[in-house]
Image (cartoon, rainbow, N blue to C red; front, side, top):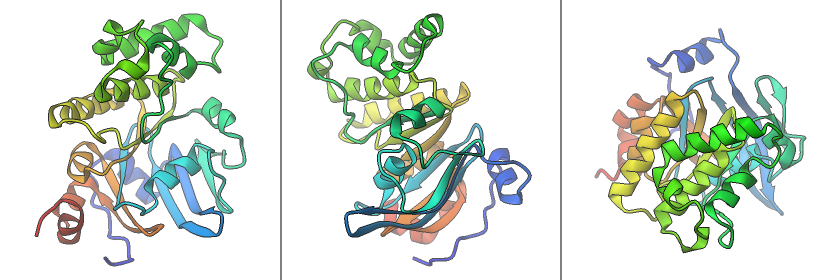
Length: 260
């Protein structure tokens, strides 16, 4: 795949405004290099996400997708580069302060607390907040998005199905009331019908005003809900374009959409 970025043809206002420089991005990842020991995992990754956008990051296994989200959320520290949220640098902050600034992270593999109830998991998502009324309102919002969680509110999270645990992981991230929600492989291991349901909910979360950066192995589904997309290969961003254009890109179709 070519290492040159294509020219975006976005019809999404947020994406277009970022490209012509008229609006500062909600999230700006600028030239980050991240390492696992001596392994150079991210090699100058730059991504922008506009206020109200869904932006997706697609790529193969080991390309650096999860590492990018872990670096944004403060679980890893870049050796080079910067990360800004609404213009404020956050890459030097510990992970809990990154959450406090407005980054919510639903990680790969869900990482719920299996011995705690659904309610206790959701309450942990709001552990930095002091506004009890707002927390209760946001829990009601989560239950509206995920009615199954209301039905399971007193159940131990580890006894729920994979789809229910994914809903809980997303709901827990929302309880921090994030400005930007990072979603890492939300469809992993789910039946096709549940995958469609999860992506409908992602669209609904975005329509309610939450900006989303989505990492997803199912590139077709990711591009169907995103405004813009980036393609990452071996720690490098190799392509960036409007999501519809990426769906029509011949190289992307062959490499990530399963076409011959």
